[in-house]
Length: 135
Image (cartoon, rainbow, N blue to C red; front, side):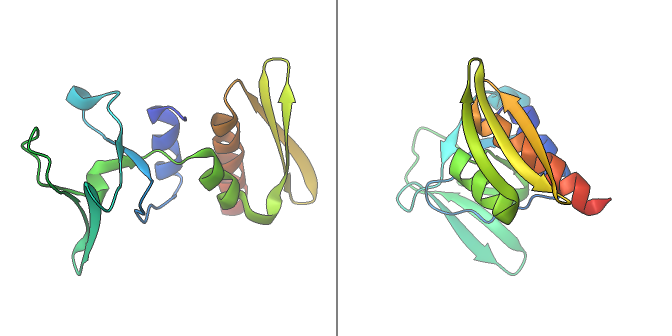
């Protein structure tokens, strides 16, 4: 799972979240650092309004939180979501002695990104791809 700082970098780079069941997120507040939540049709459900998406906390009696604007949530994309976001630029994932290497093609050139965590390697590759598309 990627770190909050990496998720913040992805958000700052323009990655937008459309919540779906199974997605993981954090509430980007210091007092909730490290807490993770999962969108679920039974407990945390996205509600679409003209003003934006609200995450409704259904039946969470242990919390004094009924809803949260999606802008106040920090999406923590999974490995498979990050790979999908790489699209056709994704070449392969390889195991290394220290973790994982993700290879992507940017402008016809192969670029490699390594990390001990596969999701973080994917995220770093995606940040590079987004940066290249903006340049």
